[in-house]
Length: 462
Ligand SMILES: [Zn+2]
Image (cartoon, rainbow, N blue to C red; front, side, top):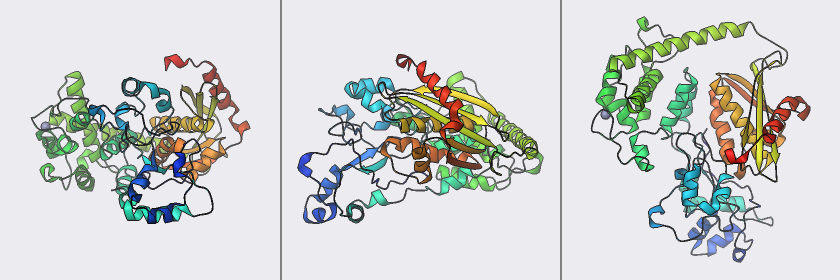
């Protein structure tokens, strides 16, 4: 699911290549050149996902800039500055203060790149503009395999976590939490120290450093919570060697009959109750005992499971001509974009099976470089909202054929990379999800809403 770190063949028309390099066929040239490895590296740029793999000062990631990376002497303290360090921890969007602090002259360029909000990996892209009939693709892959095999290597665990997180019966909130944990995106002490947010990573309950593994398994508090869990095949927290291993083991245990859970495992609820208890203690100075935490996990799990069975009964009576047999909601999203200001209005609505609109929303976004990016932002926003509303079977419609095709083919579009990877990352939240093109006249309501949002947009407020 998470985008592979393969190489995009999208030609970046906005990238200016130093003319001395010229349009050279890649493979024969590399074979002859003793410095080919560095030269390959010089031609690689990055499409930003979560920014964790990209050095802000040294890598090429600013396409509209001639050099691709910021100019000027690199302050010694910022040698290792990553693009991820310029993002806000909570939202995954640009932190304007940090951008102003590090790259004041490039603020607009940076803000026009739309990073992934949901942990999509950065993608290495080929910056060189090729011409002629030479198959640079095959030559390049051969060279890459030889000199940079790590770029082609599949990402670790990229298949496992989908199975382990998305397909399991649990609430979207839990899925997000689990997903953040497995992506190293949960702001525990060690992560915050690495991002230089906190000076120390000390656990709130003991003297150990707060890592994911410590917080959820090894801390004596977590051990007590797991010991109190009324399950078969209980896990032994101290024997857990990684979060993923503990998670797998915990999923194998089932709640004992008196708990009354039949379909869903208790483990996600325990994990999220531990996280909640930790946050209450840090942010509200409220302490919960291990017993209270496990009680909360059980109550929340039961409440959710009951709500699920009620929802199923309700939906069984509803069928209609508009939606496909599987989907029960159609989402229509649209965007309005103003080229002079690079602002966009975004809008979407949800329709039920009788084609009645039951929810609408509009928003605005600044530093949007094309109408395609605007359409992508509208669709991503619609997906996030659908997840929050717990809509599980949704068809997403857009009047941008280019967007729908790009999603469908998992195309590599550098400008859209962050957004597309989010659309793919969010898809497994749904039991049924599809994306399709819809003619503009079917989206007049959303079109009007997006235009209205754009008209009322005051960029300074953003
Ligand atoms: Zn601890």
